[in-house]
Length: 363
Ligand code: NAD
Ligand code: GLY
Image 1 (cartoon, rainbow, N blue to C red):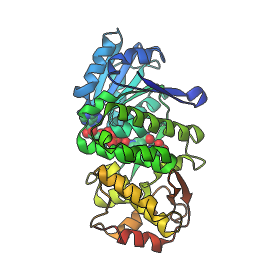
Image 2: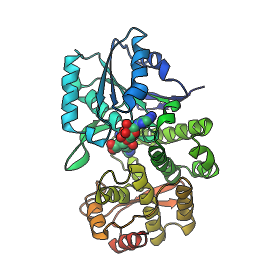
Image 3: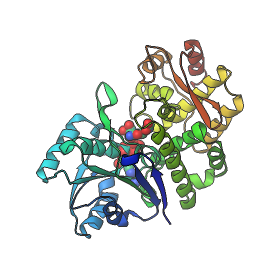
Image 4: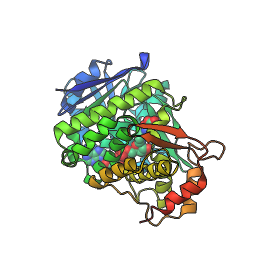
C-alpha cells in the first residue's frame, strides 16, 4: 500500500508517492502525470547500475524512448562543467520541449537534474525518484534545484517544482550505513522544529530506525514529507521566513562542514552537531530548559550520530557563520527551539554566547 502526500502549490502542485518496490511501476506514475514520449533519466555512477538501469528498462518496456545520462557520484558533480555537459547531452539525444527529465539518485543528482530541467529549452517537466534517506525526506520535495560555484554552495539555481516524487523505500536497502544515519539527522530535525509527537515516536522506535524496518520507514518518510510539504506550501520561495525553519542546526552545521573541510563530515552529521549547538545556545538564552537539549543529544547518540565539534578553530567557525546565508548585515541569526516541536528565527544573537557554546563542544 502506497501513501500519497499532496504538495498543495496550485498549478505547481504535485504528489509524493511513498511505497515499497514501486520503482518497476514508474512508467505508470509518470504517465498519469505527463505524456512521456521521451524521458531523460539522470543518475550517478553508483545509483545508475544499482537502480537507474532498472528504471530505464521499466520505461523502455512500456514503449518509452529513454536516454540515460550518468554523472560521477559525489558533490563535485553539482558544478557548471557537469551542467554544461548535460546540456550538450540533451541536445545530442534530441531532447525537445516535451522531453521529461527524471532524477534517480541522492540530493546531488536531484539538484543537478532539476537544474538541467529548469534551464534546458526554458524548462522541462521533471520527476524526482530519490534514493538516499536525505533526498527522500528533504531535497526531493520543495523545488530547490541548483549547482555550486567554488565560491559558494547552491548559489546558481532555481525554484523548479517536480511534477511528481516517487519514493521507493526498497532502494534504501543498498544505501551505505553512514549515509543512512546521516539522513536520520534530518529526520530528527523535523521532530524538533515542527512535531513533538513525531520526536517522541522517534525516541520510541530507535531499534526500528536502525534496522531500517519497513513500517517504521514508511511512517517516518511520509511524516517528514508531510511536514516539509506544509512548510513549502506556506513559503515556496523562502520569502516569509517560514521555510527558514528547515535550517535548524544548519548555521553551526554549515560552518562545521566548511571549516572541517567538505567531505570530512557528511551533511547530516554536521547538522546533528549543529542542532546540539543551537539547542545549547537557546538554553543559554533562557529560551528552553536543559531537558530539550538532553533529549536531542540522547536520540542522536542512540542513532550513532556525532554530537561534538572536535578540534576545529572557534574563530574560523565564527567567521564561517558570519558568511552564512542567514546573517543579515553581519548580525548573527539562528533558528532556535522555543519548546519541543517549535522553533523561531532569532536575530542579533550575542556573539559571546555563541563562543561559549563552541567552547563547550570540543570533546
Ligand atoms: P548524494 O546525492 O551525494 O548521495 C550520497 C551517496 O550515496 C552518493 O555516493 C550516491 O551515489 C550514493 N547513493 C545514493 N543512493 C544510493 C542507494 N540507494 N544505494 C547506494 N548508494 C546510494 O548525497 P545526499 O546526501 O543524498 O544529498 C546531498 C545533496 O543534497 C547536497 O548537494 C545538498 O546541497 C543537497 N540538498 C538539497 C536540498 C534541496 O532542498 N534541494 C536539501 C538538502 C540537501
Ligand atoms: N532544505 C531546505 C529547503 O528545502 O528549504
